[in-house]
Length: 170
Image (tube, rainbow, N blue to C red; front, side, top):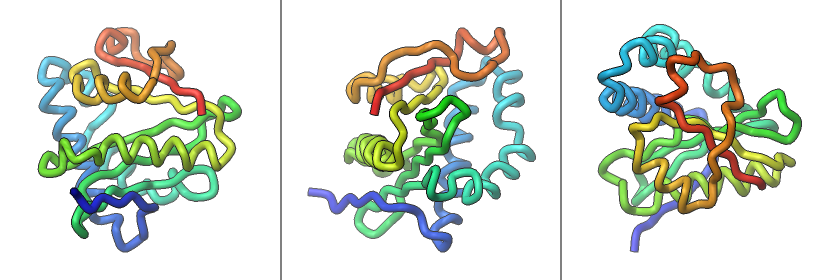
């Protein structure tokens, strides 16, 4: 049995969260080698670095949170959420589990904990987007009851065939 725990990230853990977010970006780039325009639009190094530095503000309580998965005293995963303009709707972002911890239930636990916390914060709907190449993530979202939905932001039309949008009532 693993010793898996989920908790809100502390400021002292943001370096670990940052490392996980960069690993997530690397995975997306690896899975999107045929989509350089999309990678550049969403994950250009300078803009991504600025985003990562701003995560504590973007996902600040009481309207969002950054969660970490800790397995045997090591941070192995993260997920975060924040409000969207549509009342009652929050978006989960940057769900990532280190390859060493895949298959332990960390991804599932992060998503389920995010859903519970978002519901407790008063949200009624959780949305997410992912790239079509992240088949493992899509399978997990399906197992957790997420349903395909229309895009909830204005994505470039050329990118839409490679993006998947999901939602889940809370």
